[in-house]
Image (tube, rainbow, N blue to C red; front, side, top):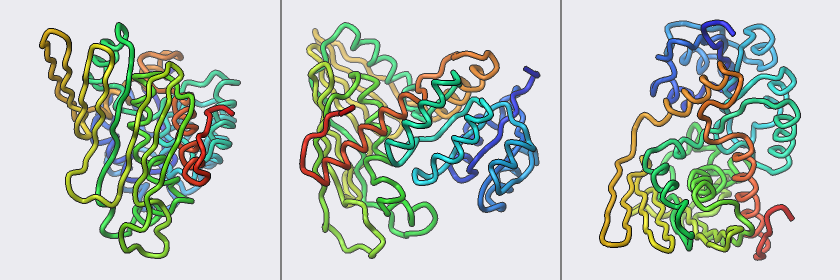
Length: 335
């Protein structure tokens, strides 16, 4: 491979801006080859962020064939996944994809099969895995037996339904808060406690006055039973404007860990009064992007902590939760 990895972007919205600003635009071994977005002005804004590098496209196929990137960032809303991945897989290109990887299990499964068939390098934007706080807790859990956990994402919801917030509150486009947003905590639960065996979920509705297009639930409680017998309750809310935020508390047989905030600061208690405090990091996008670029250059995984398979499993959990909210039944994963 040449000295620089040529990157192409399918979707060029705000999440791409975040990746660029938090490190990616400063990588000296990266070249920005193409920016694709249905809105060329959005693509142009990203192009300006990197000093005018790369061409602007409104068609993903044209971007892939004309810009000829070495690897692709797929940065699309949940409902838009599928066709772009097909194009990238056809060209055997490594790709980084933001979470959630799909709104439905069928789409995610098809993409996963293509990734496995061609042995593609993939990375999913579960950036929380790369935090020092998470890595320390995971290390400590290796000598523990997990027991239970609870946590999630709580807030009051958008005040103005513009931009992403217009489609975000439509469940047929976002998949709901648990699939689209709380997926970070779902993935973290899996990363720390292992695979999930079954899911039971309850929706909360009619808490606030909403516009007609608001079709996601106001809140939900999702119970996970892990294959190892541990359990978790994960909550989501767009109806609680006071005292919310991101959190996850877990207990093992001889440990308690409390993660707080988007940055996932952690307070760990161990036997004998031992206490460990680890602050979260702000530059976490740079870590996952660095791992992806390094892996593309090497032709093998060099530090990627979340692959497409992890994205598939998180999607399976969320889809099971949505099914359970509709049926009132426990859903067995993989059944």
